[in-house]
Length: 235
Image (cartoon, rainbow, N blue to C red):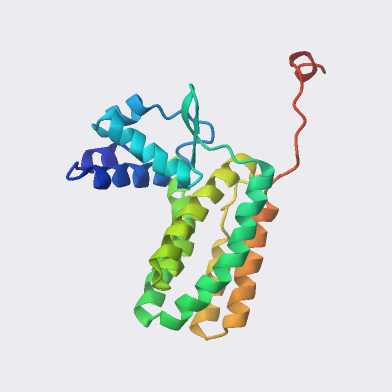
């Protein structure tokens, strides 16, 4: 986030707030910021060298997207989605992403296919590396696959909505994911691209639905009963 902070300019308040919002959203998507992390206006302002007013505007924008929770007398925190909210997020993805895929397929070019294949190669390279930095980059590359399809669709509103869904999915996976493998199956991405390239759109949509279901199946969304202090430490 520090390199992003240095790159910020305050040409206008709106542009500055949007740059901060995008930088924080990227940190959430890459799971550098965990659910429940406190985001004070003063800390955000100091990090990005902007006023608290600008920091507040960025945090408010993130709260509208469901990525930040603003609590009275406590401040702002990275959102902590409930199991029910997590289910709704993936339900929304099942409703939206097949439609995005069809719109993208109608506009996709050989250059787009090449860029998506290159993204998969980068994804595969990152999966072969170790360490927290490589893991974060892999997570971002996985989300970028879905965002690239939204961008190819040519609908800016849909693209922005997908940015929100991908970020909120990352929060959910950070909280409820059970495995250490990629949260977004690399081979499944390749199968989807191949189906689009061969114009098998019904199959591509089914693969996308299977892919989203696969991500959700790795989540443990069971309701947890809160224990008292003594109960929590009983053997």
